[in-house]
Image (cartoon, rainbow, N blue to C red; front, side):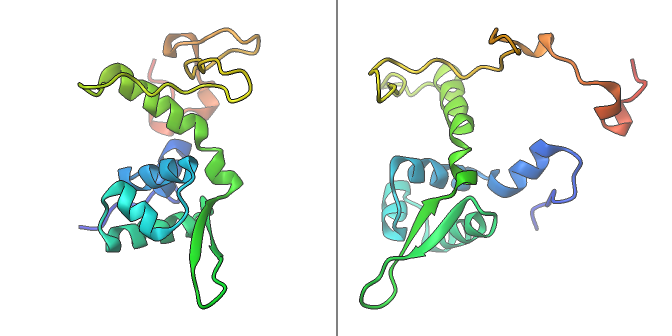
Length: 156
């Protein structure tokens, strides 16, 4: 069964998931953020089958999340490096990590201790904030009716 694609969706979440939405792709992006660059290292770190890794790396390159760089002096050897688009997934990955630590923690270890490299202080929880920097919850935001999907307009 083919996976549904959302290239033409009006929903930006659906379009984003179209590019990086399966769990292998996000784990590859996470490993790239840790500094993994070579195919063999992605395979070893993730325990992923070669054919799946090859497919996901190609898709991430095609979607501009990673770039494939020839670093071979004698023959071809490639590395996969995050693009700006890929680096922009950092807050998404951190938010997913924090959500997972809260709702599905590892039974034998605490959350990953991420720290600001410059200060050594722990990073704050990723939050949606208003224009003044105050945290917002789902109950604090609204979508103007003209931006709602057509099936949600005038339903109130």
